[in-house]
Image (cartoon, rainbow, N blue to C red; front, side, top):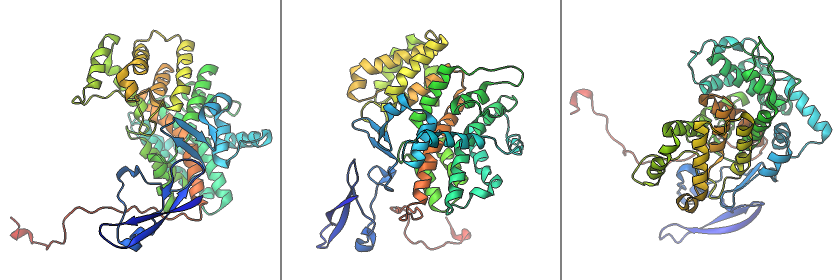
Length: 432
Protein backbone atom coordinates (compact mmCIF):
# COMPACT_ATOMS: atom_id res chain seq x y z
CA UNK A 1 0.00 0.00 0.00
CA UNK A 2 1.24 3.47 -0.85
CA UNK A 3 0.51 6.39 1.49
CA UNK A 4 -0.37 10.06 1.17
CA UNK A 5 -1.44 12.59 3.80
CA UNK A 6 -4.75 14.29 4.62
CA UNK A 7 -5.20 17.27 6.95
CA UNK A 8 -8.24 17.45 9.22
CA UNK A 9 -9.38 20.53 11.16
CA UNK A 10 -12.26 20.19 13.61
CA UNK A 11 -14.48 23.26 14.15
CA UNK A 12 -12.58 26.44 15.00
CA UNK A 13 -9.65 24.57 16.45
CA UNK A 14 -6.29 25.76 15.19
CA UNK A 15 -4.92 22.24 15.53
CA UNK A 16 -4.55 20.34 12.27
CA UNK A 17 -4.52 16.57 12.43
CA UNK A 18 -2.38 14.79 9.87
CA UNK A 19 -3.89 11.50 8.73
CA UNK A 20 -2.34 8.87 6.49
CA UNK A 21 -4.16 8.08 3.24
CA UNK A 22 -3.62 4.58 1.91
CA UNK A 23 -3.91 3.57 -1.72
CA UNK A 24 -4.57 -0.03 -2.61
CA UNK A 25 -3.89 -1.67 -5.96
CA UNK A 26 -7.39 -0.65 -7.13
CA UNK A 27 -10.38 1.23 -5.75
CA UNK A 28 -10.83 4.36 -3.61
CA UNK A 29 -8.17 5.58 -1.19
CA UNK A 30 -8.73 5.07 2.54
CA UNK A 31 -8.04 7.65 5.26
CA UNK A 32 -6.49 6.08 8.36
CA UNK A 33 -8.32 7.42 11.45
CA UNK A 34 -6.74 4.96 13.90
CA UNK A 35 -5.05 7.68 15.96
CA UNK A 36 -7.78 10.30 15.56
CA UNK A 37 -9.40 9.79 18.97
CA UNK A 38 -6.14 9.96 20.88
CA UNK A 39 -5.13 13.11 19.04
CA UNK A 40 -8.46 14.96 18.84
CA UNK A 41 -10.90 13.33 21.29
CA UNK A 42 -13.31 12.65 18.38
CA UNK A 43 -14.57 9.45 16.80
CA UNK A 44 -15.77 8.99 13.24
CA UNK A 45 -19.48 8.24 12.73
CA UNK A 46 -20.51 5.87 9.93
CA UNK A 47 -23.72 3.83 10.44
CA UNK A 48 -23.70 0.76 8.22
CA UNK A 49 -19.97 1.28 7.58
CA UNK A 50 -20.73 2.80 4.18
CA UNK A 51 -17.46 4.76 4.15
CA UNK A 52 -15.30 2.63 6.44
CA UNK A 53 -12.74 -0.04 5.56
CA UNK A 54 -12.49 -2.52 8.42
CA UNK A 55 -9.39 -4.24 7.04
CA UNK A 56 -7.13 -4.58 4.04
CA UNK A 57 -7.56 -7.75 1.99
CA UNK A 58 -6.12 -9.45 -1.08
CA UNK A 59 -9.09 -11.75 -1.69
CA UNK A 60 -11.98 -10.01 -3.48
CA UNK A 61 -12.27 -6.76 -5.40
CA UNK A 62 -15.59 -5.05 -6.18
CA UNK A 63 -16.29 -1.88 -8.17
CA UNK A 64 -20.02 -1.33 -7.81
CA UNK A 65 -20.13 1.59 -10.22
CA UNK A 66 -18.56 -0.39 -13.05
CA UNK A 67 -20.13 -3.75 -12.16
CA UNK A 68 -16.81 -5.50 -11.45
CA UNK A 69 -16.29 -8.54 -9.22
CA UNK A 70 -12.94 -10.33 -9.11
CA UNK A 71 -11.52 -13.14 -6.97
CA UNK A 72 -7.75 -12.77 -6.48
CA UNK A 73 -7.67 -10.65 -9.65
CA UNK A 74 -9.71 -13.03 -11.82
CA UNK A 75 -12.95 -11.74 -13.35
CA UNK A 76 -16.02 -13.55 -12.02
CA UNK A 77 -17.46 -14.16 -15.50
CA UNK A 78 -14.28 -15.86 -16.69
CA UNK A 79 -14.12 -18.05 -13.59
CA UNK A 80 -17.79 -19.03 -13.94
CA UNK A 81 -17.28 -19.97 -17.58
CA UNK A 82 -13.89 -21.70 -17.45
CA UNK A 83 -13.34 -22.89 -13.89
CA UNK A 84 -15.24 -24.98 -11.32
CA UNK A 85 -16.12 -24.48 -7.69
CA UNK A 86 -13.33 -26.64 -6.25
CA UNK A 87 -10.73 -24.75 -8.25
CA UNK A 88 -12.22 -21.44 -7.07
CA UNK A 89 -12.10 -22.72 -3.48
CA UNK A 90 -8.38 -23.38 -3.87
CA UNK A 91 -7.88 -19.95 -5.43
CA UNK A 92 -9.66 -18.12 -2.60
CA UNK A 93 -7.89 -20.13 0.08
CA UNK A 94 -4.35 -20.09 -1.32
CA UNK A 95 -4.25 -17.00 -3.55
CA UNK A 96 -3.34 -18.76 -6.80
CA UNK A 97 -4.98 -21.21 -9.19
CA UNK A 98 -3.71 -24.75 -8.58
CA UNK A 99 -1.66 -26.78 -11.02
CA UNK A 100 -2.92 -30.25 -11.92
CA UNK A 101 -1.19 -31.98 -8.99
CA UNK A 102 -2.26 -29.36 -6.45
CA UNK A 103 -5.84 -29.49 -7.70
CA UNK A 104 -6.03 -33.29 -7.49
CA UNK A 105 -4.63 -33.31 -3.96
CA UNK A 106 -6.99 -30.57 -2.81
CA UNK A 107 -10.08 -32.30 -4.21
CA UNK A 108 -8.97 -35.59 -2.64
CA UNK A 109 -8.47 -33.94 0.76
CA UNK A 110 -11.89 -32.28 0.67
CA UNK A 111 -13.60 -35.56 -0.21
CA UNK A 112 -11.77 -37.30 2.65
CA UNK A 113 -13.50 -35.03 5.19
CA UNK A 114 -17.03 -34.96 3.72
CA UNK A 115 -18.47 -37.39 6.29
CA UNK A 116 -19.68 -35.99 9.62
CA UNK A 117 -19.61 -37.70 13.00
CA UNK A 118 -22.44 -40.24 13.32
CA UNK A 119 -23.50 -38.76 16.65
CA UNK A 120 -24.59 -35.59 14.85
CA UNK A 121 -27.75 -37.37 13.73
CA UNK A 122 -28.92 -37.24 17.35
CA UNK A 123 -28.40 -33.47 17.41
CA UNK A 124 -30.63 -33.16 14.33
CA UNK A 125 -33.30 -35.28 15.96
CA UNK A 126 -33.48 -32.78 18.81
CA UNK A 127 -35.00 -30.22 16.43
CA UNK A 128 -38.70 -30.15 15.50
CA UNK A 129 -39.27 -31.37 11.93
CA UNK A 130 -40.66 -27.96 10.96
CA UNK A 131 -37.49 -26.12 12.04
CA UNK A 132 -36.04 -23.73 9.49
CA UNK A 133 -32.97 -25.44 7.95
CA UNK A 134 -30.84 -22.39 8.77
CA UNK A 135 -31.57 -22.88 12.47
CA UNK A 136 -30.31 -26.44 12.19
CA UNK A 137 -27.30 -25.41 10.10
CA UNK A 138 -26.18 -22.75 12.56
CA UNK A 139 -26.41 -25.13 15.49
CA UNK A 140 -24.89 -28.11 13.69
CA UNK A 141 -21.94 -26.12 12.39
CA UNK A 142 -21.13 -24.68 15.81
CA UNK A 143 -21.29 -28.21 17.26
CA UNK A 144 -18.43 -29.34 15.01
CA UNK A 145 -16.05 -27.73 17.48
CA UNK A 146 -17.18 -30.34 20.02
CA UNK A 147 -16.18 -33.19 17.71
CA UNK A 148 -12.93 -32.00 16.13
CA UNK A 149 -10.59 -30.89 18.91
CA UNK A 150 -7.56 -31.37 16.69
CA UNK A 151 -8.42 -28.33 14.56
CA UNK A 152 -9.25 -25.65 17.12
CA UNK A 153 -5.84 -24.08 17.71
CA UNK A 154 -6.04 -20.99 15.50
CA UNK A 155 -2.32 -20.23 16.00
CA UNK A 156 -1.31 -23.60 14.57
CA UNK A 157 -0.93 -23.47 10.77
CA UNK A 158 -1.63 -27.18 10.26
CA UNK A 159 -4.73 -27.05 12.45
CA UNK A 160 -6.01 -24.01 10.52
CA UNK A 161 -5.56 -25.95 7.28
CA UNK A 162 -7.36 -28.99 8.70
CA UNK A 163 -10.22 -26.83 9.97
CA UNK A 164 -10.54 -25.16 6.55
CA UNK A 165 -10.72 -28.49 4.71
CA UNK A 166 -13.28 -29.86 7.15
CA UNK A 167 -15.54 -26.83 6.91
CA UNK A 168 -15.52 -26.79 3.11
CA UNK A 169 -16.13 -30.55 2.97
CA UNK A 170 -18.81 -30.89 5.63
CA UNK A 171 -21.08 -27.93 4.82
CA UNK A 172 -22.91 -29.71 1.94
CA UNK A 173 -23.35 -32.81 4.10
CA UNK A 174 -24.83 -30.80 6.98
CA UNK A 175 -27.08 -28.91 4.56
CA UNK A 176 -28.42 -32.05 2.89
CA UNK A 177 -29.02 -33.61 6.30
CA UNK A 178 -31.03 -30.54 7.38
CA UNK A 179 -33.25 -30.91 4.32
CA UNK A 180 -33.68 -34.68 4.65
CA UNK A 181 -34.53 -34.31 8.33
CA UNK A 182 -37.18 -31.66 7.59
CA UNK A 183 -39.04 -34.00 5.22
CA UNK A 184 -38.59 -37.15 7.31
CA UNK A 185 -36.32 -38.95 4.83
CA UNK A 186 -33.14 -40.94 5.57
CA UNK A 187 -29.80 -39.17 5.51
CA UNK A 188 -27.73 -39.91 2.42
CA UNK A 189 -23.99 -40.36 2.84
CA UNK A 190 -21.57 -38.44 0.59
CA UNK A 191 -20.09 -40.23 -2.41
CA UNK A 192 -16.44 -39.72 -3.25
CA UNK A 193 -16.92 -40.77 -6.88
CA UNK A 194 -18.95 -37.59 -7.51
CA UNK A 195 -17.66 -34.04 -7.72
CA UNK A 196 -18.56 -31.45 -5.07
CA UNK A 197 -21.84 -30.12 -6.48
CA UNK A 198 -23.03 -33.42 -7.97
CA UNK A 199 -22.39 -35.05 -4.59
CA UNK A 200 -24.47 -32.38 -2.87
CA UNK A 201 -27.39 -32.84 -5.28
CA UNK A 202 -27.17 -36.59 -4.74
CA UNK A 203 -27.30 -36.22 -0.95
CA UNK A 204 -30.21 -33.81 -1.39
CA UNK A 205 -32.44 -35.80 -3.73
CA UNK A 206 -31.35 -39.46 -3.67
CA UNK A 207 -33.14 -42.22 -1.78
CA UNK A 208 -31.70 -45.48 -0.40
CA UNK A 209 -34.46 -47.42 -2.17
CA UNK A 210 -33.64 -46.48 -5.75
CA UNK A 211 -30.85 -45.18 -7.96
CA UNK A 212 -30.59 -41.44 -8.50
CA UNK A 213 -28.63 -40.05 -11.45
CA UNK A 214 -27.53 -36.44 -11.12
CA UNK A 215 -28.55 -34.26 -14.08
CA UNK A 216 -25.35 -32.78 -15.55
CA UNK A 217 -27.03 -29.51 -16.57
CA UNK A 218 -28.38 -28.98 -13.05
CA UNK A 219 -25.03 -29.90 -11.48
CA UNK A 220 -23.26 -27.38 -13.72
CA UNK A 221 -25.85 -24.73 -12.82
CA UNK A 222 -25.34 -25.39 -9.10
CA UNK A 223 -21.56 -25.25 -9.56
CA UNK A 224 -21.91 -21.87 -11.29
CA UNK A 225 -24.11 -20.54 -8.49
CA UNK A 226 -21.57 -21.68 -5.91
CA UNK A 227 -18.77 -19.88 -7.78
CA UNK A 228 -20.78 -16.66 -8.00
CA UNK A 229 -21.62 -16.73 -4.29
CA UNK A 230 -18.22 -17.87 -3.00
CA UNK A 231 -17.12 -14.47 -1.70
CA UNK A 232 -18.28 -10.86 -1.83
CA UNK A 233 -15.80 -8.75 0.07
CA UNK A 234 -16.76 -7.34 3.50
CA UNK A 235 -20.51 -8.01 3.48
CA UNK A 236 -22.55 -8.49 6.67
CA UNK A 237 -21.88 -12.19 7.17
CA UNK A 238 -18.17 -11.97 6.26
CA UNK A 239 -17.76 -9.03 8.62
CA UNK A 240 -19.51 -11.12 11.28
CA UNK A 241 -17.06 -13.98 10.74
CA UNK A 242 -14.10 -11.60 10.98
CA UNK A 243 -15.49 -9.90 14.10
CA UNK A 244 -16.10 -13.24 15.82
CA UNK A 245 -12.69 -14.46 14.74
CA UNK A 246 -10.98 -11.35 16.09
CA UNK A 247 -11.86 -12.51 19.61
CA UNK A 248 -9.96 -15.75 19.08
CA UNK A 249 -13.11 -17.87 18.75
CA UNK A 250 -12.63 -21.28 17.14
CA UNK A 251 -13.23 -21.44 13.36
CA UNK A 252 -16.41 -23.52 13.56
CA UNK A 253 -17.99 -20.97 15.92
CA UNK A 254 -16.96 -18.14 13.59
CA UNK A 255 -18.58 -19.73 10.54
CA UNK A 256 -21.68 -20.53 12.58
CA UNK A 257 -21.90 -16.81 13.39
CA UNK A 258 -21.63 -16.08 9.67
CA UNK A 259 -24.48 -18.49 8.95
CA UNK A 260 -26.66 -16.69 11.50
CA UNK A 261 -25.89 -13.33 9.89
CA UNK A 262 -26.55 -14.70 6.41
CA UNK A 263 -30.00 -15.82 7.52
CA UNK A 264 -31.31 -12.24 7.45
CA UNK A 265 -33.79 -11.43 4.62
CA UNK A 266 -31.72 -8.40 3.60
CA UNK A 267 -28.69 -10.65 3.03
CA UNK A 268 -28.83 -14.36 2.23
CA UNK A 269 -32.61 -14.54 2.44
CA UNK A 270 -33.11 -12.28 -0.57
CA UNK A 271 -33.61 -15.08 -3.11
CA UNK A 272 -36.24 -16.66 -0.85
CA UNK A 273 -37.97 -13.26 -0.79
CA UNK A 274 -37.96 -13.28 -4.62
CA UNK A 275 -40.00 -16.50 -4.73
CA UNK A 276 -42.37 -15.18 -2.05
CA UNK A 277 -42.91 -12.09 -4.20
CA UNK A 278 -43.58 -14.14 -7.35
CA UNK A 279 -46.14 -16.20 -5.44
CA UNK A 280 -47.77 -13.01 -4.22
CA UNK A 281 -48.09 -11.70 -7.78
CA UNK A 282 -49.65 -15.04 -8.69
CA UNK A 283 -50.44 -14.47 -12.37
CA UNK A 284 -48.95 -12.63 -15.34
CA UNK A 285 -52.12 -10.52 -15.62
CA UNK A 286 -51.38 -9.08 -12.16
CA UNK A 287 -47.90 -7.84 -13.12
CA UNK A 288 -48.94 -4.33 -14.34
CA UNK A 289 -50.60 -3.63 -10.99
CA UNK A 290 -47.51 -4.71 -9.05
CA UNK A 291 -45.24 -2.68 -11.33
CA UNK A 292 -47.45 0.32 -10.59
CA UNK A 293 -47.15 -0.36 -6.86
CA UNK A 294 -43.36 -0.64 -7.16
CA UNK A 295 -43.17 2.75 -8.87
CA UNK A 296 -45.35 4.42 -6.23
CA UNK A 297 -42.99 5.91 -3.64
CA UNK A 298 -45.82 5.98 -1.09
CA UNK A 299 -46.49 2.25 -1.48
CA UNK A 300 -44.37 -0.02 0.79
CA UNK A 301 -44.31 -2.79 -1.84
CA UNK A 302 -40.88 -3.43 -3.38
CA UNK A 303 -39.87 -5.73 -6.19
CA UNK A 304 -37.43 -8.20 -4.69
CA UNK A 305 -34.38 -9.26 -6.68
CA UNK A 306 -33.86 -5.94 -8.45
CA UNK A 307 -30.99 -3.55 -7.77
CA UNK A 308 -28.15 -4.05 -5.30
CA UNK A 309 -26.63 -2.05 -2.45
CA UNK A 310 -23.13 -2.34 -3.90
CA UNK A 311 -23.71 -2.55 -7.65
CA UNK A 312 -24.94 0.64 -9.30
CA UNK A 313 -24.61 -1.08 -12.63
CA UNK A 314 -25.66 -4.56 -13.76
CA UNK A 315 -24.70 -7.14 -11.12
CA UNK A 316 -21.87 -9.04 -12.89
CA UNK A 317 -23.03 -12.27 -11.26
CA UNK A 318 -26.53 -11.79 -12.62
CA UNK A 319 -25.34 -11.43 -16.19
CA UNK A 320 -23.64 -14.85 -15.85
CA UNK A 321 -26.56 -16.50 -14.07
CA UNK A 322 -29.15 -15.22 -16.54
CA UNK A 323 -27.92 -17.62 -19.23
CA UNK A 324 -27.65 -20.42 -16.68
CA UNK A 325 -31.22 -19.79 -15.58
CA UNK A 326 -32.62 -20.09 -19.09
CA UNK A 327 -30.60 -23.25 -19.80
CA UNK A 328 -32.04 -24.86 -16.64
CA UNK A 329 -35.61 -23.92 -17.58
CA UNK A 330 -35.05 -25.37 -21.06
CA UNK A 331 -33.50 -28.58 -19.69
CA UNK A 332 -36.46 -29.13 -17.36
CA UNK A 333 -39.07 -28.07 -19.93
CA UNK A 334 -40.42 -25.47 -17.54
CA UNK A 335 -40.60 -22.39 -19.77
CA UNK A 336 -44.38 -22.41 -19.36
CA UNK A 337 -44.47 -22.77 -15.58
CA UNK A 338 -46.72 -19.97 -14.25
CA UNK A 339 -44.37 -18.75 -11.51
CA UNK A 340 -41.37 -18.84 -13.80
CA UNK A 341 -43.26 -17.08 -16.60
CA UNK A 342 -43.98 -14.26 -14.15
CA UNK A 343 -40.27 -14.07 -13.37
CA UNK A 344 -39.25 -13.99 -17.04
CA UNK A 345 -41.83 -11.26 -17.74
CA UNK A 346 -40.55 -9.17 -14.82
CA UNK A 347 -37.02 -9.64 -16.12
CA UNK A 348 -38.02 -8.33 -19.57
CA UNK A 349 -39.74 -5.30 -18.03
CA UNK A 350 -36.75 -4.46 -15.82
CA UNK A 351 -34.40 -4.58 -18.80
CA UNK A 352 -36.57 -2.38 -21.04
CA UNK A 353 -38.67 -0.09 -18.80
CA UNK A 354 -37.19 3.43 -18.50
CA UNK A 355 -38.11 3.62 -14.80
CA UNK A 356 -35.94 0.60 -13.95
CA UNK A 357 -33.11 1.48 -16.33
CA UNK A 358 -32.76 5.06 -15.02
CA UNK A 359 -32.66 3.81 -11.44
CA UNK A 360 -30.37 0.91 -12.39
CA UNK A 361 -32.81 -1.59 -10.92
CA UNK A 362 -31.50 -4.52 -12.93
CA UNK A 363 -32.25 -8.12 -11.95
CA UNK A 364 -29.58 -9.22 -9.46
CA UNK A 365 -28.05 -12.58 -8.65
CA UNK A 366 -30.75 -13.36 -6.07
CA UNK A 367 -33.45 -13.00 -8.70
CA UNK A 368 -31.96 -15.65 -10.98
CA UNK A 369 -30.73 -18.03 -8.29
CA UNK A 370 -34.20 -18.10 -6.73
CA UNK A 371 -35.77 -19.03 -10.07
CA UNK A 372 -33.19 -21.77 -10.69
CA UNK A 373 -33.70 -23.28 -7.24
CA UNK A 374 -37.46 -23.22 -7.66
CA UNK A 375 -37.20 -24.92 -11.04
CA UNK A 376 -34.95 -27.62 -9.57
CA UNK A 377 -37.56 -28.43 -6.92
CA UNK A 378 -35.61 -27.02 -4.00
CA UNK A 379 -37.94 -25.59 -1.29
CA UNK A 380 -37.60 -21.87 -0.66
CA UNK A 381 -36.59 -22.28 2.99
CA UNK A 382 -33.47 -24.10 1.77
CA UNK A 383 -32.29 -21.26 -0.52
CA UNK A 384 -30.24 -19.50 2.15
CA UNK A 385 -28.67 -22.82 3.15
CA UNK A 386 -27.34 -23.20 -0.40
CA UNK A 387 -25.93 -19.69 -0.15
CA UNK A 388 -24.15 -20.77 3.04
CA UNK A 389 -22.57 -23.77 1.28
CA UNK A 390 -21.09 -21.50 -1.39
CA UNK A 391 -20.07 -18.70 0.97
CA UNK A 392 -18.30 -21.02 3.45
CA UNK A 393 -15.11 -20.91 1.36
CA UNK A 394 -15.20 -17.10 1.34
CA UNK A 395 -15.71 -16.98 5.10
CA UNK A 396 -12.89 -19.47 5.64
CA UNK A 397 -10.51 -17.55 3.36
CA UNK A 398 -11.36 -14.24 5.04
CA UNK A 399 -11.02 -15.79 8.51
CA UNK A 400 -7.64 -17.31 7.59
CA UNK A 401 -6.40 -13.99 6.17
CA UNK A 402 -7.46 -12.16 9.34
CA UNK A 403 -5.81 -14.68 11.68
CA UNK A 404 -2.55 -14.46 9.71
CA UNK A 405 -2.57 -10.64 9.67
CA UNK A 406 -0.04 -9.28 12.21
CA UNK A 407 -2.13 -6.07 12.47
CA UNK A 408 -5.21 -7.98 13.59
CA UNK A 409 -6.91 -6.73 16.76
CA UNK A 410 -10.17 -7.63 18.46
CA UNK A 411 -13.03 -5.75 16.81
CA UNK A 412 -14.50 -3.04 19.02
CA UNK A 413 -16.56 -0.35 17.21
CA UNK A 414 -17.28 2.91 19.01
CA UNK A 415 -20.69 4.57 19.37
CA UNK A 416 -22.24 8.02 19.47
CA UNK A 417 -24.11 7.94 22.78
CA UNK A 418 -27.47 9.80 22.71
CA UNK A 419 -29.05 8.55 25.96
CA UNK A 420 -29.49 10.13 29.39
CA UNK A 421 -26.70 11.82 31.27
CA UNK A 422 -26.05 10.79 34.89
CA UNK A 423 -29.29 10.26 36.86
CA UNK A 424 -29.91 9.63 40.58
CA UNK A 425 -31.62 6.42 41.65
CA UNK A 426 -35.15 6.96 43.06
CA UNK A 427 -36.59 4.26 45.38
CA UNK A 428 -39.70 2.58 43.93
CA UNK A 429 -41.95 4.03 46.68
CA UNK A 430 -41.05 7.60 45.63
CA UNK A 431 -41.42 7.14 41.87
CA UNK A 432 -44.39 8.81 40.22
